[in-house]
Amino acid sequence: MPKTATQRIVFGIIMALVMVYGMEVYNAALRNGGLTNSVFLIPAGELAVLSLLVMALETFIGGPLARRLAFRLVDPEKDRPIVITLTISVFTVCCMCPMMSLVATIAFKGGFNSQIAATWVQTVALNFPMAFCWQVFIAGPLVRFAFGKLFARQEWNSVQPLPRPRKK
Image (cartoon, rainbow, N blue to C red; front, side, top):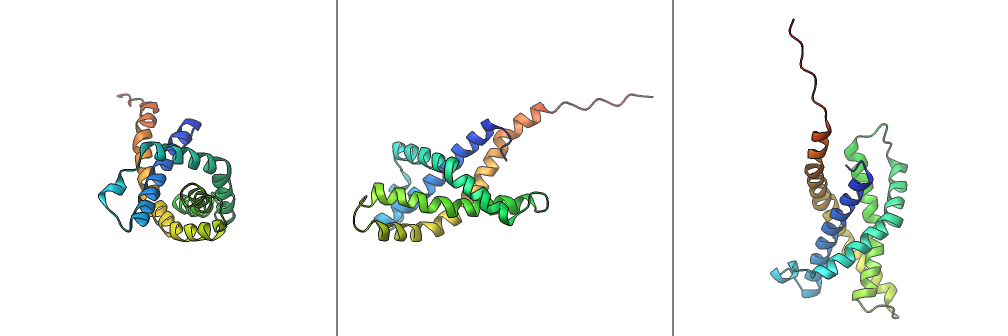
């Protein structure tokens, strides 16, 4: 997991891209009445803008709130790291899904109109199961694995070799 500010930024960028891509494919499939090859081609501009928005919301609102809620249930001193990671992931989805569903409601589903509340609630209801499963079972493990591979070499290179034992 990230240990430095640079690592946290890299991890956040990768996670935002993977989560946005997965959710955009899912929502495009919903809009088009099913999954087709064309829904995998998300416009790069849309992906970049939504990823930046996710990173901003997660950094300033969703992440701090998710961690505060998670650490009411888990104790870093007593609980296994995977339990802590999964608890934070679940609460992150609980915080981020309603916020990003509101963004999607405003940007893609008619904006501010008389049905905004109903459209937003429906969008959250449709997105939450996918966001939860995507984060817990696909994006989270995939990004943690890729991040571990990406930064393992740096950690390995920073380790000093052990001195050789002297012959007697």
